Image (cartoon, rainbow, N blue to C red; front, side, top):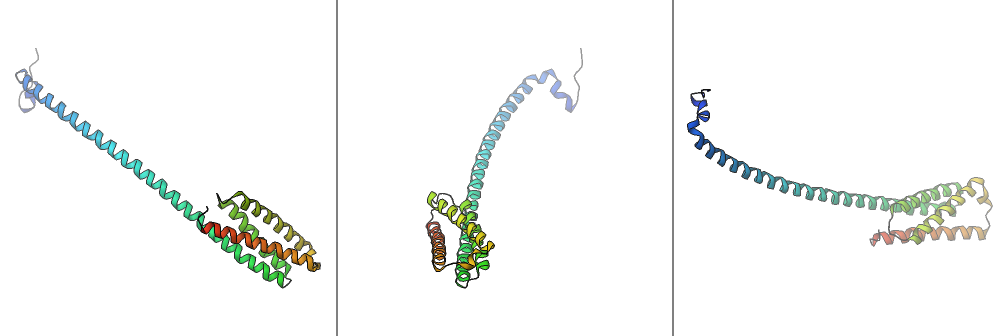
Length: 181
């Protein structure tokens, strides 16, 4: 038969202390269970806070993305408005090459707008596509030198279409300012 250790570290192994050790073990088990339950509650609470923080971050990212898109749209509208004014001035002065370059800037801005505006309406998208096609053909005609020999009627038609494109840009600007997208 083995002899239990003696001294301070030997008392738990002494059979005379079995009842005391069982009581201490019982209370330590209850304390451990309570501590585990408190830890579980804290963990669930922290997880719910993390979910809330993740949702807040997602909402903020969406808000920032919308703000950036609105800024991009406002910037493109501003560029298109300025470029259409330049087109009118150049055409009035028969500076066709400069007019075509400015008109091409209008086209680039309209195409950028088409990609950035959602929910503005299919009519606007179709009008942007039609304007883009007209501007492309106009620039090709200028590059071939066909615009120098325009008749008064052709010049009037060209100015009319430019005014329509100016109106399209203005309509998009108003629609966006009213929060349509």
